[in-house]
Image (cartoon, rainbow, N blue to C red; front, side, top):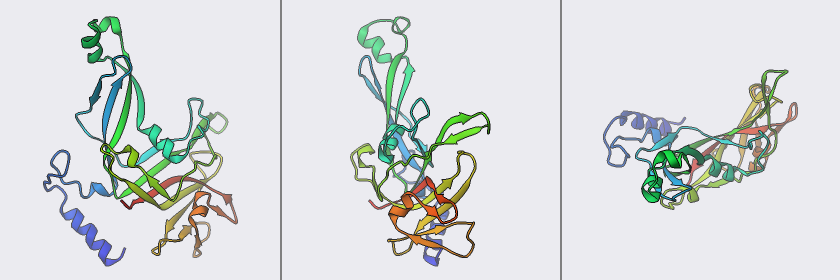
Length: 242
């Protein structure tokens, strides 16, 4: 880090714990704002359509998106669609609205299917997104097989549709960690990070000490080395641009 970056981080650390009106619970989140994403959650009952918002904010320091269906096979979605599925959930729970609206006791209605959707209320400067590539279980090797299908993503990630009030929220790819190997829990990793100039990525590989390769964004979607061939992206780091 250069002196300017170091100073800015020192200033952030020194403000931790002070009060701020901007935080959802009155605390200063300037340190956490670097990496933490906060959500509000709205639940909609499939029977009576009554909606209820959560009283507390949810937060994630790392977004883990799945690329599999119920059969642990590739679901065919791109990264943005996988993120949308990550924010959606179905639960079985008793709905107070059904009891009031249909005038039937809860014991008769049973549990209703509720659709939960999270919406972004605070976005971090750096968004860490992990692509969950674990597929079916391999009994022979006692580990999870890795899905190698490509999950398409662009150089910019527009999450405006997922904010709670429609605020523009866009990110630009800053770094990639890619993996090679048949199993999800072991193999060889390489990394790529965007250069200071912003147009190229520098690839770092601990199998090649002292040499670095510079490539384009398209090469970061499917990184490859002369020795090991093609790698699959597993962790994406995005930098906020709006």
